[in-house]
Image 1 (cartoon, rainbow, N blue to C red):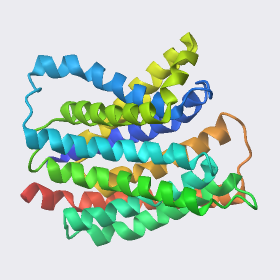
Image 2 (cartoon, helix red, strand yellow):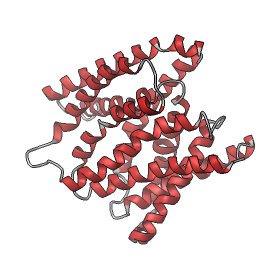
Image 3 (cartoon, rainbow, N blue to C red):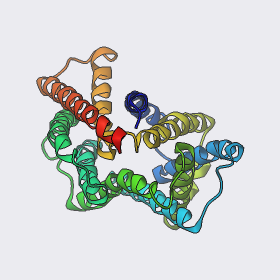
Length: 305
């Protein structure tokens, strides 16, 4: 791994965190009457179609049966995550799902230890715990008594979190075998295509496809914005970083996204910071800085390998 590639990967993930933070306000502009699983399927499908001309130009459309199966597995993980998220939100609040999502980087570290054993794994545990603790404080600011999630919501979204945690390590493992040589564009295209097909199939069974008639012109343009900036760009940056820095370090940037969203509320919306928010912001900052330093210590070893 070149040092320039290492720096570019982290800079790209900074942009990733910013795009993720900005996507929440954009998603709120889309009509709530439209089935969310259908919206997500359309976002993934649109992103895949945008990348298709680029793959055709590069001649990167060749696919083996093993490669197709690998992309199908990764696409299924995406579908399981988004499907479980929207099902859980029917029974619990976004605060609770956001709190549960803070476990994903730690679960990613666990899957990374199983699929990609590395001597630097232990160095990332403490920084990730610090950042996760800070993110929980930031997310829980709006929680009140009686907002505990139902056991069903926890079980359903727990499966989704496991799927998302497995996505990055499995992606990196497959890129060393059946998906060897596949670039970020190819990974993004095929994974999103399969994810969209699985979600569209789910909409067919649930009847969610009927809400497509409620799409307005405004919804359509916001959907394009979300597809390009909140989905296509973020997944391309994600796959660009995977393989340069550890999968658990990559997904940990979600903590930074939570921090950026909080800073937006402080400085742009003029909301007064709460004491717990300040503590949470400091913990996220310290944890992410320590995680970055542990990643830098891993660069020489990666170069030698």
